[in-house]
Length: 458
Image 1: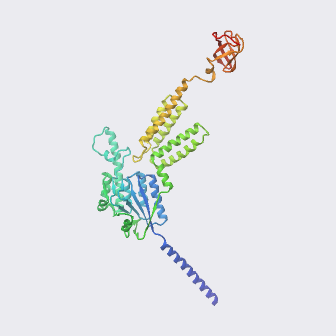
Image 2: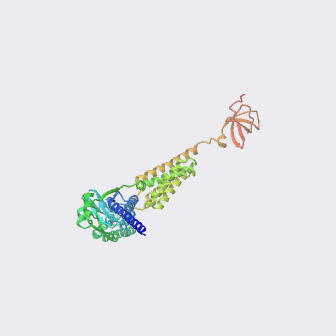
Image 3: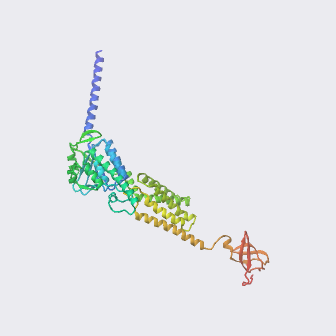
């Protein structure tokens, strides 16, 4: 019994030491785990590519237990839909998100202002600006211009446009006011930034309590963030930035690809290349290359259109215009299908994007329309030339041809025309070797007449 008791006690001690060792290793591993902040660079116009980059960047930071996410902003604005998706991601983030307008000379205009207001901490570098958050009307004119007192050429249309403008501005003002109240920032100035397009420098923004920090660089920003308390997902957290490392997350291949193809001009070219490629493949089955290139381009264009505010009526008009122009080659209408196709193509290109901040370049539309018009004009020219060319095959080719009688005959005999022997009939006597002219063709029998000015020969 004594030996059993000793062994049991020994086992308990061994288990205790083992568990204690595991616990100490776990604690030391946690203490040794690097503390870092993820930096996401929001540069250029905000669109689907920026949205994808920021959303996935925040998710990656959360999965890797980052202490915070710092959005380094320098943007003139962008797509409303993408901006709202980024704001929603920031508001739902389980870790602090800091918006930092940098470097000096950068700006957070339009959509950038909303993102800055949504962040848990707002900071700016010296000599930076923010504001001018007035939404742009879908028709392409500024909302402010629609609210002016200038007389309208069309009162009914002006009233409709003004109503749409007021609706957009009021919605944007309420949206940014809600963000300001949520983060405890200056809501009055935020509304003015929407309604009056006002802007602020970094120093002015700090005095008006639009931002919390003016930092000359990333080290200065981290120093001022240390010890600051923020509300994250309903809980108060104290930021600790002492010995915090910075990890800049650069856009991966997916974001870079989306950045390229989500450009409306690139998406437009891909769509045209895809449609033309498939048409050429159908016109010349077995060519393979046009079909492969066309299919790839069309799929990339459809992926881009999925994240862009596309007007599918415009896309349909483009496709219809191309079909009309190509149909000119197969069902000649001497310009009717061609001109109709060019008109539909141009109208669809102009209507393609539903947002004024994005759109297909006018020179690009003009250039592609000219190429398409040149294509169908070339088809018409070829058709007209073909119409005037004398037939080279069939009965039409035989009529008027000169041949030679192979024997003497008065009603029916044999003649040679175009190095071929034909059965022929005539209404006057033909002598062997005499030249004859073909008057008609009935199946494999020719109707000929002898040429009297050419004496027969052997």
